[in-house]
Amino acid sequence: MVKADKQMEAASYKETYQTIIKTAQRLFMELGYRSVSTRQIAQICGVTQPAIYHHFKNKQTLYVAVIQQTLHHTESDLKAILGKFSTFQERLTQIAFYMMIHFEMDLVQMFHDISHELGPDNQQLIHQWWIEGFFMPIVTMINDGIINEEIKNPESLNTNSTELAYLILNVIKANLQPETTAVLTQEERKIMAEKKVKLMVAIFINGIKG
Image 1 (cartoon, rainbow, N blue to C red):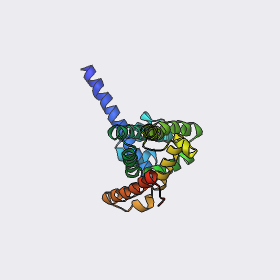
Image 2: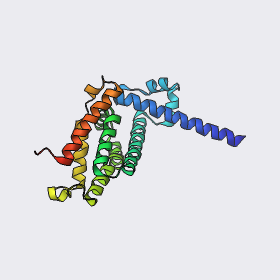
Image 3: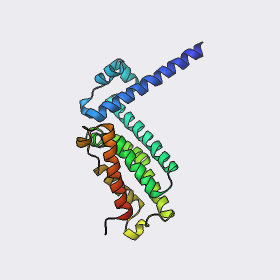
Image 4: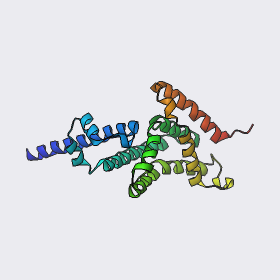
C-alpha cells in the first residue's frame, strides 16, 4: 500500500511538473519572458505559487527548463526526420518545414529573451543545448549529402559544413515572419510555409542561375 501511494505521489509530481512546463512555454513564447509572472502561470495551472517554487527555484530557472525541454524535443524530432528520409533534398525540405511550422513564433521570442533576460551562464548552457538540438542534425544532413555525392563538398566553395549549417539555419530564421503569420489560420500558415520551403530548397539545390 505504501509503495502504491508513493507511485501515485511520484506520478502526480511529474504531471504537475509537466503542466507547469507546458503552460509556461505557451505564455513565455506568446508574451515574452518579462511579461509573464509565476503567479500568472500558477493561476492557469490551477496550483499555488509556492507549488511553482517547489519545482523551480525562480522564474529564470523555470524558463531555462522550458528551453531545455523544447530543444530536447526538437533534437528528437530532427533525428527522426533524418532517420525517415534519406536524400539531402528530402531532409532539407522536411526540416525547414518542421521549423517553420513549429517555431514561427517561438524562435523570434526565444532568441530575444535569451539575449536580454538571462545571465551568461544560462546563455552558455542553452547555447550548448541549441548546438545539440538544432545545429548538429543540420551538420549531419550536410555531411551525409557530401558522402552520398548529392551536394558539393563545401571546401570547393571555400567553406565547410559548420558554416553551411549556419547559413541554412539563418535562411530558415529569415523566413520566419510572426507579424504576418499571427493572423493566419493553421492551414494558411501551412500553405505559406510549404511555398517558402519549396523556394528555399530549390535555390539551395539548383541555384538561381539561368
